Every structure is written in C-alpha cells, then in structure tokens.
Length: 139
Image (cartoon, rainbow, N blue to C red; front, top):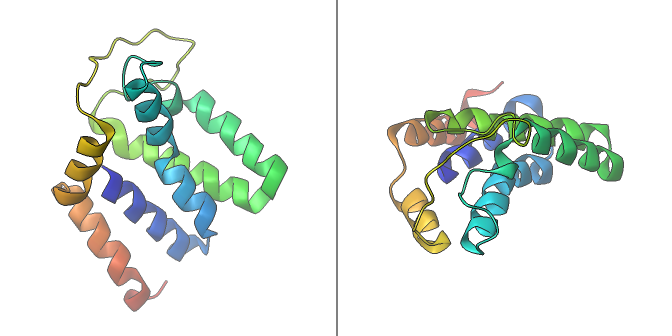
C-alpha cells in the first residue's frame, strides 16, 4: 500500500498545510522498520513493532523533542494514517502488550516495493487521484 500511504500524506499536507518531511517520513517508516528488520531475519514478519500504537507514540514523541510540536503533529497523524490504511490486513496495534501470530513473508523488499508501485490497488489509485487533484480543487 506504499502508493496509498504516500497519497494520504500528500492529502494531509494539502489540507492541513503540514510539513512534508514528517508527513512523508511517517508514511513509510513503519514499513521500513518492520519489513527491513524482517528481511534481515530480526523480526518474524513485515508487520511487527513498527506497526503498533506504542511505536507511533514513541516516534511521535522523539520527533516532537527534536523538531517541535508541529512536526510531531504531522508525524503522528501520518503514522496513524499508515496504520489505518493497513487495516485490511492484521495490525499489531497493542504490540508488545498483546501477542500476535503472523505468517512470515518470503518476498524480498524489492519485490514488495515493485508490487506496491507497479500494481496499486483500486483504493490506492483513488487516493492518488484525489491527492493529485487536491491542489486544483482547493481547500
């Protein structure tokens, strides 16, 4: 859902006049953490610690400490949007406080990225169309 995550961040940037780096960074951060650590053999699946509310809160707090309140707001909103967009699958919302059992993926990161970029879902296409047309539509 990479295309969808980026599209949602673009919409947040447009409608909330958010700052790009925190919005786009948080849009891909959970996948970079979980899929990266999964492919390195450290985590069992591509949805683990990075796809939890605890990770969202901790990273939002860190962004707030280092870059300020507005950046933290944008990071937190985009991070939560990422988790909500992923709800079509299993999300470990309350990890590590609750146990989750997920099937490991045998696809490489490059395969995952290629599939996400070349074959977006209908929802991702709609979100991307909205994000691209939002500047023309105004606020």
